Image (cartoon, rainbow, N blue to C red; front, side):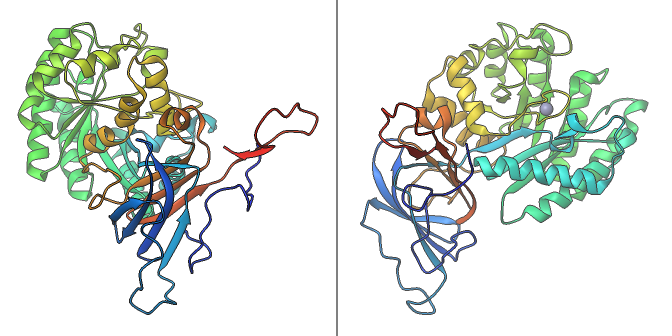
Length: 422
Ligand SMILES: [Zn+2]
């Protein structure tokens, strides 16, 4: 497959005053896009919001803008052949480790190098459509706040392209051994970490860890986003009970070792879950057989637990071939998770947004203009292989991917076209 564009049959092109629609002005018209329910519509965006949605052809041409009809502050994008969706989000990543699988070991780690890898990882995921992303980063011990500072530098440079959130993860918080973690956590939240996190299972006193974390989160008025791989229902119940007072600002993941009682325990506590389809059910956790059976996501959803799905690792020690494509996570859920295509996409879109504290998106007037256009005419088709994409964040087109697949003339051409965008 070659990355290219074809004028007649290729990716969407701007037809308004702005020749290159990336970085266009405050008004954007997405014309002729198909929605997941089958309607073909025009969508007008003003600022960072969807202003209007109407039947195809009903919203053009662009309105006169301040500055007159020759204003270059708008663009019209033809999205015929594209499916328009609420943008996905990445609710659980480890970007400070991204691409580390290819590094020579032991790798010298500089702040600039971590910032570069975090930025590259975030842009990779953005290109696939994730306009909001949350990454977990270790603090304390030998790391201090260096990795967090590198992530926050990347966050700053990505402003306007994507929203990047950082979760500070101290290793220990209780007892004398946790003194450094407690101090570093408070400093991390003051520095700008979005949420308090970590893995209570690694602390000798998991409930004590949660209580210290919640105190810090309340003080900083921030959410909590924790890891657990607890398999023992009693241990999970203690954790869930300790976290319950802070809901709905609690997210728990990847829950990759849940036993049969796990969904009931989490449902009782009313805690939101982020699962990682790429990491959990294939490899197991820490040598244990993986408890995240393919149907577990369906069991969680059936128990009434809001379930989001994320990518987790991106070409690091846990997953040397991560892709950071939310549609791939949705594909894995739909292919092996026992849930429908719509629910699978919701897990990487609005459930993922909710898991990181963001409001829902619908392709409807008044909603945030966080959108993904993907080549195809159905959600199932998009999850199966929609390569050409256009990404809108905060009302701006921030990324466009164009793919063309070509076949040699000698192939029997029983296809409608010799060359078609993917
Ligand atoms: Zn993680």
